[in-house]
Image 1 (cartoon, protein in one colour):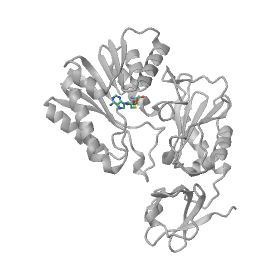
Image 2: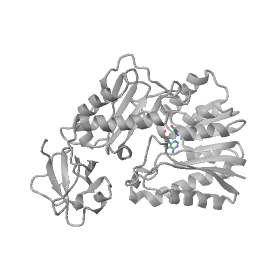
Image 3: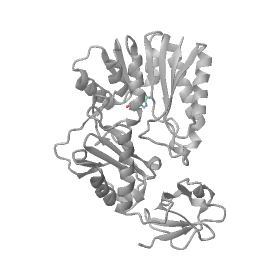
Image 4: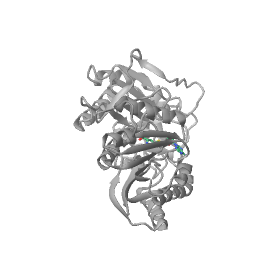
Amino acid sequence: MKMYQEIVLKPKKDESLRRFHPWVFSGAIVPTAVMPAEGEVVRVLAADGSFLGVGHYQAGSISVRILSFRDEPIDRSFYRTALTCAYRLRRQLQLVRSDQNTYRLVHGEGDYLPGLIIDMYGDTAVIQAHSVGMHRDLEQITSALKEVMPSGELKHIFYKSEGTLPFKAGLAAEDGYLWGGEEVEAIALENGLRFHIDWLKGQKTGFFVDQRENRKLLEQYAAGRRVLNMFCYTGGFSVYALRGGAVRVDSVDSSSRAVSLTNRNIVLNFGEEPRHNAFAEDAFRFLKEIPEGKYDLIVLDPPAFAKHRGAVNHALQGYKKLNLSAFGKIAPGGILFTFSCSQVITREQFRLAVFSAAAISGRKVRILHQLTQPADHPINIYHPEGEYLKGLVLQVE
Ligand code: SAH
């Protein structure tokens, strides 16, 4: 077996690893003269020399991301096994069907592969590395992926990590196709609806795969309603609302690129659609200017207001303000779908922010559904940080 450099933890710093939490923080490590190279696989040992796990080393606050709690090599066969499990779960979840081929195949810690995201859009896999280790292992990952995926389900692999890897000298993470790339059909199916996916320039891997089930739920509420989809990005909620029988749908995003992507997706599904309009505007300003009662279904799906712990209080004020303006404008009997995707904000904190907004508005509000991320974004129970998407469906009298 290949010899991996060893990292030794300070006394009593092994507890979280023994509970299978996959991160080793820099303060837990006994410094040595020669630290491992960025992205190298290391063996982590407790102060008494006992084995704890193998993982990717990276200088920074999270110094090691554990890949296995068994003393095993991290090689192509390791990735083959991990990807096989990941694919099998998505099959069990019935995410691969004739009318549905958009799903997350690998969700980092949730699939025991910290630092790795793989989204499937039809026969294209978009790989995103969030750690130098995954970047270094890319070749093993792609060859394992080709072995694991049934033929016909994978024809192209696009690598999109320029924006997610820390900039380090010698790290050449250029976005581009690793495999295939000719005659790509960049259209994916979600619950029978079609979406152009822009993995070349779009946000994340090109689409917000995590809202699939919540969009489907919205479809059930759309009939006969006037819908406002705030922070629409590529228009996911708008497309479902139109199929669900909304009488009108207005989509708003501050990015004009997002607005044109939304319009393209409406045309792709419905052709000319007089019920739909899209506006490139700031959400807060838009909400302020519309008359009360203009909409009876509003979606608020903003970007993460808090990216780190220091920003939590400011972010909670932001959620409160945003929801307050929606409570102020939604028609009586209206339905509000409101979300937070900030990982550092807990479900309770978010709910409290929405509660405060409701209380200030003075309206009667009931919670109909409490929403989260779908099962192809699993949460490793030992890694609660993996739970990030929170949503409430409210009825507002
Ligand atoms: N609901 C979308 C995902 C939303 S992502 C979906 O289902 O796909 C968040 C979006 O908010 C981004 O497209 C971003 O351009 C937009 N955005 C960020 N700040 C904004 C603001 N102040 N007003 C309007 N849109 C904003």
